[in-house]
Length: 285
Image (cartoon, rainbow, N blue to C red; front, side, top):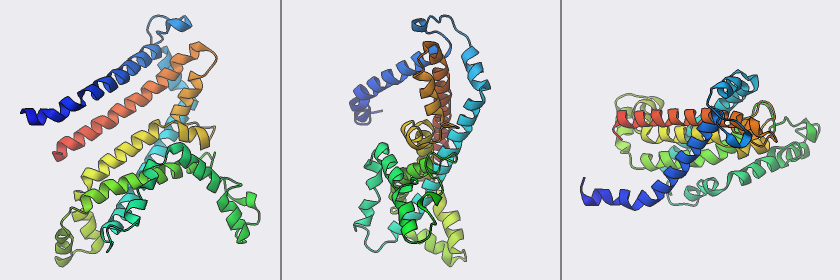
């Protein structure tokens, strides 16, 4: 590797070293405490009893399923909508119009602000119920079905969907606008339908954007704390909220349970990194 190729790595090294130190120190400390080595709480030695207790806890299993469900549904829908919007944008006659920039706006909006927007619109006293009631579509404002703090996590999913769709759109659009449109036209001229041409010709070309987008959005939604904490259900709670509940317990002896839950999330993150690396290796990215 010549000096020019090494230059970006050398320039990024100070930041990467600091971040790597912070990440691995945090993981190491959490791992030790999850094994019961927490001298501040009078715990010493190492064992798996906290992992066993957490894994046998029905609340943990429900939280695990709920977190997977929210992360998968929100990420899959965001990627599907992202592909749809990217196709619309790339076929737009005016590619530099305002809509090509407005769709990116949710990316820079913090998740806490997105939560406030969802709460203002979809809560039982929000804008949407009042509008539907004013239009005579609801018999009463409180007849609006609960979409925040609900067990199905609809408010949480919609928040992630609003935040994640622009990211997926941007990733797909970047590749799609540089794809030769002649491939799609050639498939049509050979007898393929529009859907077949898109599915068998265009969609494989979008894999370098679709798979990373889904994995990034899934990882964030799975490990995010603030959205399910603010508008998620109290039962089942998302895994990060469950870990936080253990962490803020007045009993320091509950801290290893929080760290055991955190280590489960770390394990899921490493699995996602492994899947992403395998996909990159197979595709030669």
